[in-house]
Length: 112
Length: 112
Image 1: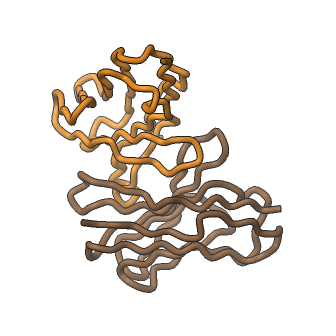
Image 2 (image 1 turned 90 degrees about the vertical axis):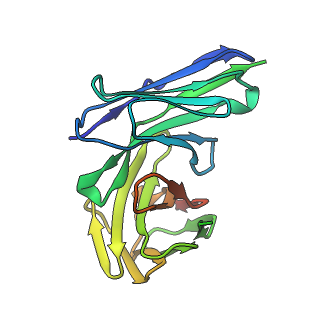
Image 3 (image 1 turned 45 degrees about the vertical axis):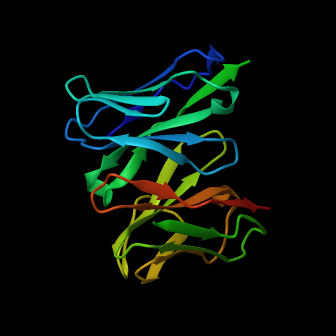
């Protein structure tokens, strides 16, 4: 069973700090990874995808991928209260029509 | 740009009644389409995926079915709903390069 693991949290950070969200995956052949933000009662919003080892930056967000360690992370700089949400990590599952295989998500709380 | 439409947004149905949820995609052709369910406090579970018209694969046994009568239309159905079918249903589209994946707004289904 291919798994994506995330700490459920909640992760609490003060406003303006860096939030670090982590994710590990079990399938060594996984190539593409996604980070989503989901507000309560809403559908997931794509933050960014990453498929090469190293860092990928988009605004206040940086995704990091380490395929050797099977580890993906998301850094949020200058965290804002509006960043408070559940963050979902996902990998592409080539055995299920390239569907996204999700972790259970990490709850982030940014306190003013 | 690609957009994905899903309706209705909310639905309250009695046990034993039928269900039909519709999802359409604009701005792309031959998309891979997916139905997920998110039960309260739980992760996203893949229900069905489709890589082409009339090509449907089911991931979990259940009393739900899916159909894809047109290239950019994906329908989730049930002949008789169960209480356990309650949840947040999400339609998703993933591009052929596996670099972008977007969700519809979701349907909150409550079976009473």
